[in-house]
Length: 345
Image 1: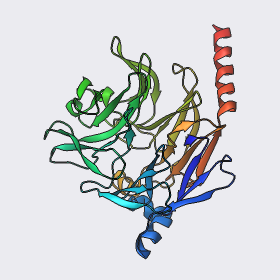
Image 2: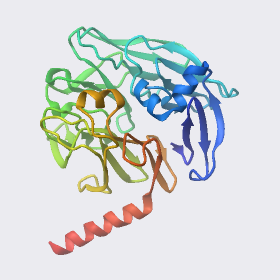
Image 3: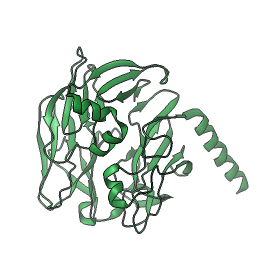
Image 4: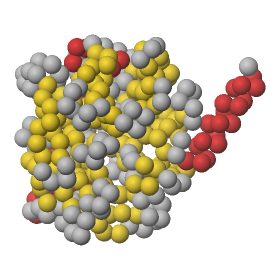
């Protein structure tokens, strides 16, 4: 999302909608051969091979930077063609791209890294030319889960995983000239996405080793559990004051949920489950890793419209479909529920 504009893709073509997904206009395509195009257009094949668009970042000048399988791509303001500007050498793709207050772009490497090699953060001034901005030493972390801009502090947070000492919330206010761990060495700090607040962060956990929670983190009080989750949380968004968190069915000895769920809040304290989606297929965990877990991929961005959006993955009956929530209706429902609870008390 960018204001009231929604971006969506079909295969390797990108489209935009300015009328709440009632109609879409072509924006650009990533040029590829027949096989790559066929894979990207097939929902199951694109899931397994991580094909298609994983994330896009519209820039102020009309350019767009995109993450695709094994590449960072760039579309100039006056073009309808993406060009590959950086080959991803390790892993299939980073999980997001973040823009700082200076306008610079950043992403961190996300790859299996069983040997715990050094991990790089890349930066770009223009979306086309990329260089290493920071490097974690070998053994320091496994990989980067994401980088997120904090408008309250004019800074960025980097999220790393996976084992206790590798899991941390890192902070930089100088575009990675320096990077400091604010909290480290606990699965509570293992997260894929956050929402910065004036008094801290909302941190939904992402761990198979213990119960997951939506948490509030502050420097003074540390972590405070707000709501228990049935599984790991990969996505959190703020849609015009409606906060949504979705969980993925990454089953473990602790987290037994086989489907995906969506939780919502209007005050960041009280959370309510609003959707419970069943898995598409019952398969062993090792197979699920390949064909992807059930997941509701919330659309990030700057929401100014009436609706929030997501894409369903490996979910029964709606795999690959776009989901839409009426922000006002859900906010009213949650606010009424809170009022009823206060009256009861």
